[in-house]
Structures are given as C-alpha cells and as structure tokens.
Amino acid sequence: MREHFLPSSQGLGISLSNAITTRAELDDMQLVAASKKGDQDAFAQLVQRYQRRVFNLVYRMLHHYEEATEITQETFLAAWQGLPSFRGDARFPTWLYRIAYNCSLKSLEQRKRDKALQEALQAEQVLEQAYGDKSADAQLEMHDRQAFIQELIARLPAKYRVVLILRHLQDMTYEEMAEILTMPIGTIKTHLFRARNLLKERLQTLDRDRFLGTRGL
Amino acid sequence: MQCKEASRLMQLYIDGRLKFDQIRALEAHITACSACHAELNSLEEMVSNLHDFKFVAEPEDLTAQIMRRVAISPPRSGTPKFSLLRPSLPEILAAVFLATIATLAFILQLPSVRSVLPVANGHDSLSLAFLHTLHLLTSIDIGTLTLVLWIVGTFLGIFITLLFAGNEVRSRWFRAMMARLPER
Image 1: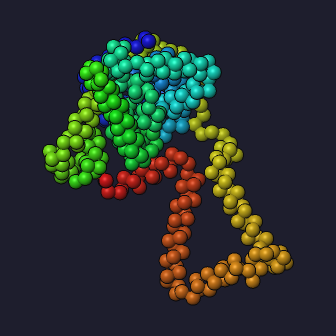
Image 2: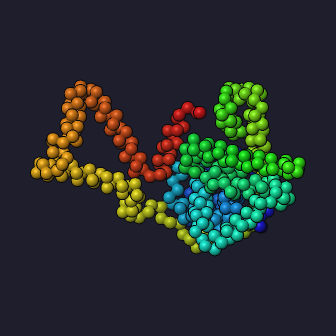
Image 3: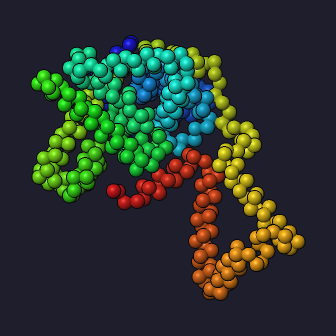
C-alpha cells in the first residue's frame, strides 16, 4: 500500500465546522461562481482546498489507495460537470462530500459486480479466513491496534462505516452528516450508535481473547 | 436512570450533545453502576483510538490529474433538457393512479355501465357504504364539514407536493420537520 500518514486531523486543528469559516465560505462562493463560468483556475483552487478530505473519505470507504485516487478524480470531475446545477442550497463542501459518498457507493457496487475484483475478494476472504483462525496474539503480531480497528471499520456495512468516518475521522456534526447523507438526524444517530457499539463489542472480544491468550487458557 | 437509557445517553455524551442536567444524571448513574462505568470507559477509549487516526496523504499530483480530466470535459448544461419527458418512477405511478381514478369516475357515471357492474349499481354494499358516508357528510353542520375538508385537503396537498418535489426537497423538508421536534 502506498499511503503516507499525515498528522492527525485534530493535530492539524482542522475540523470541517471550524476550518470552514465565513471567509472561506465566501471564498468558496466566489470560486464556485467563477468555476460555473468555466474558470478552471478557480476550480483548481477548490480542488486543492478539498481534495485531502474527499480523498480520505473515499479511501476509508474503499480501503484501497489506487481506487480511492480514481474515485476522488471522478468526484471532482462530477462536481465540475454538475456545477451549473449547484444552486448553493447546501454549502459547497457538503455538496462535494455527497458526490464523493455516492461515487464511493457506486464503486463498492461495481466492485461486487466486477469479476476480476470478485476473484481478488475471494482471495482476500481466504486470507481473512486464515487470519480468523489465528490466535489473537498472532493477529496483534501482524497488526497493531489501530490497524485492527481500520480492518474492523472496513468490514462494517457501508452505512455504518460512513457515519464513523464522517464523525470521528472528519469531525463532522450530526447536522453536517445529515445534510451530506440526506438522512434525518435520528437515522444518523441510530447508525452511529450501532456502528460504535459493533466496533466496541469486537474490540472487547479481541481484548478478551488476548487476555485468555496471555494466561494460556 | 436505567442502564439502557444510560447507554443511549453515553453515545450522545461522547458527541457532546447532552444538556447540563442530562450530564449530571448520567454521571450520577455511572458513579453508582460499575457496568455502565466500564462501558463508558471502553466507549471513550475506542473513540480516542478513532481520533488518533491520521489523514492519509493523497498522491502528490492529484490536483494535476484532476485538472487534466477537467480540461477535456466541459461543464454540463444547468437544466437537463426534456426532463418533463423523463419522469421518475414515483411520478409515473402517481400519474397512473390519478389517470385510473379519473377513468373509473368517467365510466361509473354512465348509468348503462353502472347497471351491469356488480359494484356501484346502487344496491351492493360498496354503493350503500358510499351513500351512507355521503348522507353522514351532508347531515353534519357546514362548519365541521369545512374544517374536515380543510384538514384533509391540506394533508393531501402536502402529500402531492412532496410526491412531485423529488428526493432533495423531500429530505430537506423532513429534516426541517425533525429539527422542530424536541431533542430526545
């Protein structure tokens, strides 16, 4: 895998709600207006401003670096082509995230249908089977806790995965998530609570296995 | 406070969505309940693990790659042409439903057709129920009838508007409605 990790989002002090100030929103509006008139330089600025967050959302959804690169490109291309229909009802990043999420879902669907990738998935399943058969200690030798959490997230259903990513990795509020995913806030809460509970249960199982393993039980 | 309620509040607590009195109530429960205390600890630990996730660096030439594709792809036209000729499935179903009602109403108003039908001929149970309802409506006072028709008309209007408004407007309307409900 070719990914390089950057300092955490918290470390950078970037959160969507905080980082996007009124000034930035104003800039966005001006850049969007210029882009709508065909100004590619203005659109390039929007790309630079949001590509990291879009890429990370897609990457966490797909768990595949090259595919995430391709889908990020498709997201911005779709945004460029769809700009004339962007009326500004939602904020630009919200609209962009919605496109990225939909492109990711489409890609996941495509992945299921794609025969070649299906074979790769089957191979992956075999590996996972072998992985599952190993003891918890062996698992921890292969991956640290964070990597294990990443794998657990990747195995969650897409609707649970996306709320976890948006809430904890992209630091979004319920309202922002509801707007991006076009879901009522109640549904967002339900998905988020279930996702966290699922993750917590699986981590607890891991910890229990480790404990029993260290005691030789 | 029951543990089930505490468990729900913990999730909101993690997201900073609790009011002061709710936090006090949750803290009181957690102090007394070791199971919930452990649950909150493990939830906080897991969330802390998630927050430690680092951003993955995108490819260095990603902007250039995107802009290369943008350069050869002009923006699409704002309003799709012939969108009226490409209705969505709910719009088609609504049109079929309304057309069916209109056709039935037209056919059933012909006495010669009604007399040969097993229903709506004036003697079957459906006709009798219809006549009975009509009689009931005409016998109540005009003020009540107007109120009932106004309420039914309003809901019907909202329903039809939302049906044709599309997903975007429907979800925005639903969110606005939900936002007006008291926070659980």
